[in-house]
Image (cartoon, rainbow, N blue to C red; front, top):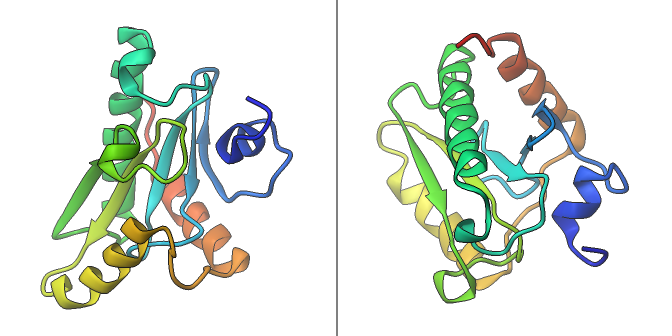
Length: 150
C-alpha cells in the first residue's frame, strides 16, 4: 500500500533499524520504544488485521517473534519477561494500519515507568523518538544472539 508507513519501511523507502528480515517478514526496532530493546515484527504483505494473512504467515510471525525474544534475553533485554502485544484493528488501538507484533522487554519493577509510555502510545502521541544510533546498537546486540535454526 502506497501510504502505509510500514510498507514504506519494508520497501526500504524509510529508515529503520532492522533486526531480522526474510521473504515473509521484517523485524525492526520501534522508533518510540516502550522499553529498551522494543522490537516490531511486520509481515511484508500489507494487511490491517491478522486474519487477512495466510495461516502459515501468521504462524511464521509468531515463530520469528519467539526467536527474537530469546535473542533479546540473551542480549540483556527482557530477562524478567516480555509483552507480546498485537493491536488487531483500529478499535484495538492499532495506530498504524498494518499488522505488527510488539515484543516489549520488561524489567522487574518497571510498571510505573511503562504506564505513561503505554498511555502515550494508545493516544497516538507516542512520546520521545529514540535516536537511530541507539536503535542500531540495540538491533546489533539482538542480531548477534539471533538463532534461526529449527
